[in-house]
Length: 193
Ligand code: MN
Image (cartoon, rainbow, N blue to C red):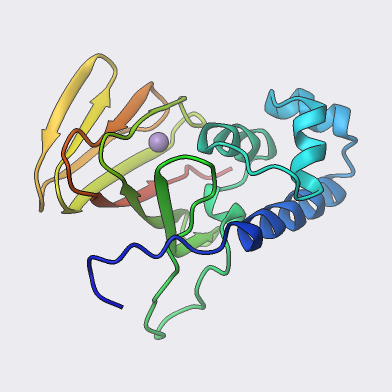
């Protein structure tokens, strides 16, 4: 696979994986759909559709679900790679019907307290992120193209190789205003729960 080819994965597999993870999480907690809807702010109807593999939620919805269950976003991505020293070649998957691809390089591990995801934004894509759980700290390192990153009111212009750390529990946004895809590494650190 060449560096420029975007492997978008298989939407069906992603929907099935989401469905399984959500059902498993809800079973673990012993939560009804109603209880899960209260915890996540996502409607019972939508949660039911996701659990049946009938709907692939937006990334924003996925974040709300992860936050409500108190788990990392990588819990909802396919086949996070095994522990080192294996070489990681995670698929870039599209967890939602939008122009954002995510590759879980290192899934959340409670001993380590972080997850590392490669995110690719297709040209013109903007994503407003709701604040994550209190104490979450994000790191962004641009590996390809250019990225505009908003933290609170300010848009920062990042070029390839630039790195930023910011509080993920505040409002923030990501935008690719260029005509080429933009990729960045997103290291998300979760405080001890
Ligand atoms: Mn974020």
